[in-house]
Amino acid sequence: LRELYAQPMFILSSLLCALVASPPEACKALRGFYDAIGAKDKSPSFKDTSSTCCAFLDVRCTQPDGSPSPPLGQKEGWKAGATLTKIKFRGGTEFGSSGTLPGALLLPLAGTLESLDLGKSSAHRSFSGTLPAELAQLTALQKLSLTTGKFSGTIPHQLGRLPALEKLTLLSKSLSGTVPGELCHRSDGSLRKLVLDDNVKLSGTLPPECFLLPTLEEISAKKTRISGTLPSKITAPLRLLILEEVSLSGSVPEELCKGEKLEELVLRRANRVSGTLPTECLSHDTITKIDLKRTKVGGTIPSLDKAVPKLKTLDLSNSDVSGTLPDSVDMFSGLEYLAVDRTKLYGTVPESLGDIRGLKNGTCTLQNAYDLVFISIVSKTCCYSNFWCPLPSNAPYCTETSSGETIVCSVMSPPPPPPVEDAYDPADSVASFDSWSLPQELVLFFVLAAASAALTWWVEFGYDDDGEGSGFGSRVVGAINSTAAA
Image (cartoon, rainbow, N blue to C red; front, side, top):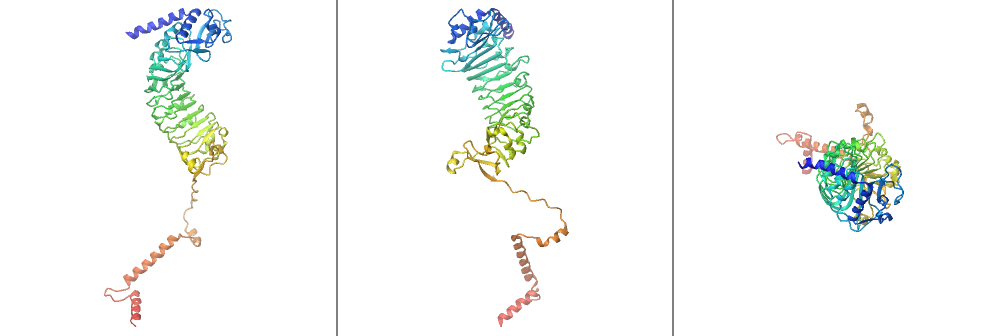
């Protein structure tokens, strides 16, 4: 019953607020909001209470006929009926003490306010308390950005009701609880960007509904306690998935890399993520950044049969990626940052690495886990590599450290395998008999075996059953004994 009652009341209150929000009333409400949070606009118009608030430096309004707005901070030129659409606190507002966010004071702007951005925390601007549920009644809101750092409590599930909301950014070190699935329940909604970074107390799993939302393009929840696994079914047109320093586990789903718009995949320091390197991501036409640093992702870097020119950053350092760098590594022709240090990669570094022009002025690291201060001091060397010697000479920016020291190549490449011999031919064996050569150990073995056989024959066949000599051995022994008696 409560829900049935609340929904009509919610719609009714929004309509009433929209009706009463005439330009003078909107400015009156805005000034009351400024007073409550201890804010003062730096424009001269702020002190003139009869002046329009559209001249405030951190406020934007829209002309009723769509004509261009006057220059920033100018109170002349605004037409009757101009609507207040954006509040974006930046350098144009001074703050005394912020306190809690009085959401109820913004209700007169419910039908027109499209963007509310409180800016970043500062010495005098740091809102606290819980997020007001009244924010869910700002029905025209397209962008809500609350990054002041001290909001506490949970994320109001009512925010999922906002029909026009496109960008939701909640950055606070004190928000707790879980991400409400209601944020992604509106299949007819317009949510494109969901940013929940730095909420170190935020836990639970990301709602699977978000990965099915037909409008959602960006999810970022770095430095949170988000856990669980990524869903296997992903139909949202994601461009960015940034889950850095979270408690996710499981593997990277292949479905993620089959989207047509994916640009950035960042799971940096999500050290419970495992599985194999998604080859579909590495060859994606739109991908610009893959960062799997300090994860347990394994697998190999595949050979490429087409260029991937848009990939700028590939960081696989401190992961379980193994195998070798493929000869087709130059297919990553747009790379500007390549980090494969502290991995299980080995083998020959292909010369084609030197053909990637962007790395010459970018970053390229191949050293292994021995990049330690101890080694730098004791052995006077900096870094070692699992890759075989010699390292390519045409890519010094990859084989040298940032301080100009050459990476020590400690593993020599194995000798080439022996040539495959043709099938055995007896005629060839006879013809080449004189050229045979046997190892000395084998020759010594045959000599000792022959001596042992001769001695055995001597003992076994040199005497008969009566002890009388009857063979060659007995005659030799008898001759020796006769000579000794004489």
